[in-house]
Image (cartoon, rainbow, N blue to C red; front, side, top):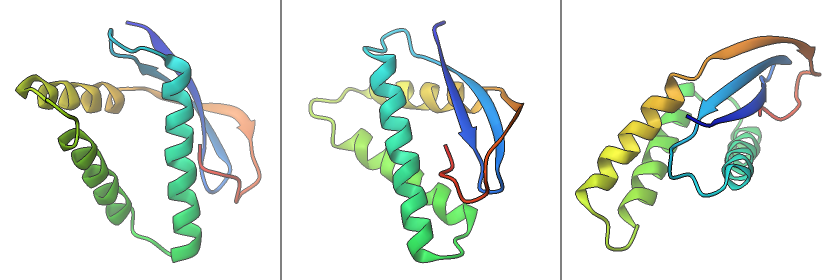
Length: 110
């Protein structure tokens, strides 16, 4: 399985290195990386506007966005749902390794 290496910086400045597994039919790892960064940036911007936001609320909104995006795919098949579940499971199985790098608190979380 191909991997997408990704660096994540938390709100308190901790840095993690992640190797996300990519689906065999991934067309562009570069596009996946850019979209992931864009989604995380958008979430960070909204949280900065909203203020203190519960993690559960953020995760619920992201789950709803994934469900919405899945349902608006034209001519979808039943296999699409199974593929989405597999993608989420693979992403949750990714190992987040702490890095010796640090970042200033307040930097974007990605």
